[in-house]
Length: 172
Image (tube, rainbow, N blue to C red):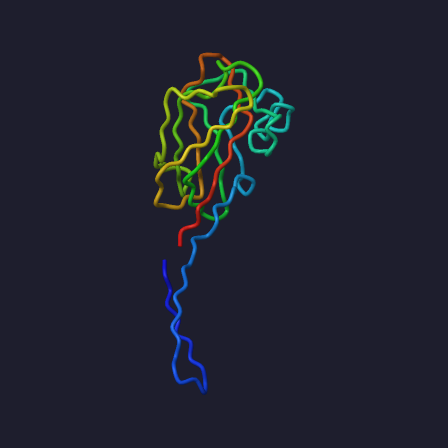
């Protein structure tokens, strides 16, 4: 975006014109601003050593683990203010690749009931334990809810993930 400004100066014979380029706002990791919820929790609860709160704690050495993976499993963030998310990342946890997310979709909602699928991934893998993969996608709207629906893992009855981060790209 370009803005043109006229500069008027008292006593000058000529007015000067300047052109300024306005840069878009910087992207921001807004994960910590969201209220986390899951539909399947660690048996010890959300604050357990491997509870759901670990998946957004910013610490790649912790993890979220569930013992009863089901393809209806989701992890959700609810924001007080709508966010424009176009990038997210997932980090594999320390144990077996068979527990990693493999297929999923990311959906957005403004009421927590009606969802728009924004990104779908299938057959994803992580090259190593503790590896972060980033995913960019096109999104033209803002949402107050973002839900990561993990529709398949690597084949285990358990699920694990070290971290999920979402990046807000403010709309102009």
